[in-house]
Length: 119
Image: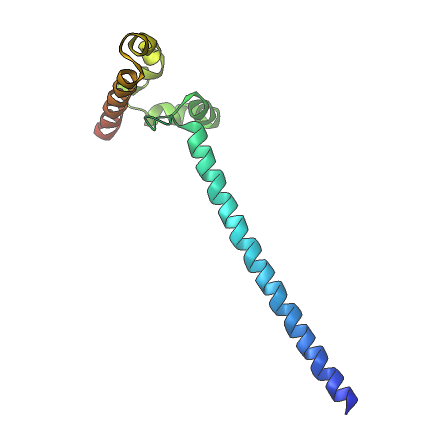
C-alpha cells in the first residue's frame, strides 16, 4: 500500500514540476517577446526625427552601412539632399521662434513624403 501511495505522490510531484516549467517557459517567452518589441521601438525612435518622423543621421548611417546603393535607390531624387539643405533653419528658429522652425520642418517632411509616394 505505501508503495502505491509513493507512486501516486511521485506522479503528482512530476506533474507539478512539469506545470511549473511550462508556466515559467511561457512567462519567459512573453518577456522575450516584449523585449524584442521594445528594442524595435527604441531602434525606430533612435533612427527617426521625433518631429517629422524622417530618418535622422543615425538612421541614415545605419542604413547606409547596410547597403548604400539600396538606400539611395529607395529615396526620391528630391529628398536626397534635404538633409544637407535644412541645416540653415536655425535662422528661422532665432528670428521667428521654434514653433515656426518646427512648422517649416513639418512642411518639408510632408513634401519629402509626397515625393516618396510619387516615385
